[in-house]
Length: 107
View: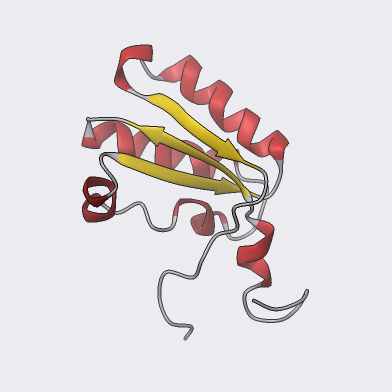
C-alpha cells in the first residue's frame, strides 16, 4: 500500500477494527449500517468492505468493521449496544493496526 495520496492510502487510514460475531444476517446488515453511520470519513463503505453474506458465513458468522479513529469505533460500539439486543451480537476482538484491504479492482 502507498503513502498519502497514493492508491491504498484510503484503506490504510481504516486501521481501527472491531470483529463482531452474530448468527443473525439481519444483524450483520444493521452492524454494517451502524459502521457507516459512525464513520467520520468521505468513503465510509471502506469500513464495512468484506462483510458480504458469503464472507460472513465463511468467517464463522463474524465480520470485521474498520474505522479511521478509535473515537469512530467507540461511537459505533456505543450505538450498536444502544440499538441492538445484547443477545444478538458480541464483540470478538479489536485492533488499532488492522488496515482495510481493497475488495475489488480500482476503476
